[in-house]
Image (tube, rainbow, N blue to C red; front, side):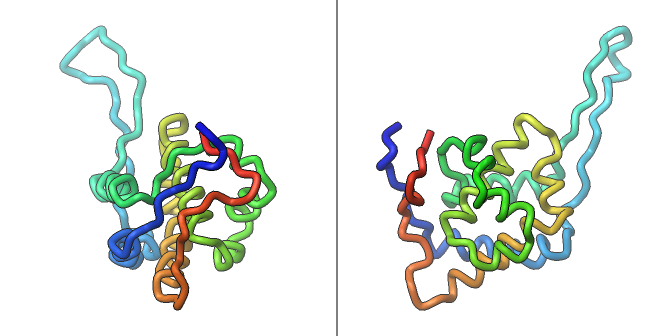
Length: 158
């Protein structure tokens, strides 16, 4: 995909959804993951145990997709950048994150769930999603458009 591709701006509904989920994300009250073991009704058949997201996390993840918080880009490459490392590793840094950076962080976590079960729950339990939702709420109440929908400089979308 061309490097000059832009991301559609977030809508007021996108920010309203984050404000809706904010109290539960900050309280880390989104339910627990369930380990689904082998099915005892099928003797001799072995299933690899898997983690299953709680219904609340499934609903939250669906909202992230539906309201434009998850975008298509090369998130594994972005996670290796100094800015991404700073945003993920230094909690106070999120306080200066742009709306686009929040979207990139959310996308990286949600997409990582496909390769590492528990990535979304872990990000909720660590407080990362609470900090992201708090920053989104702050951006939505600012005087300027919070997300112009433009890619960061030298950024390549997948």
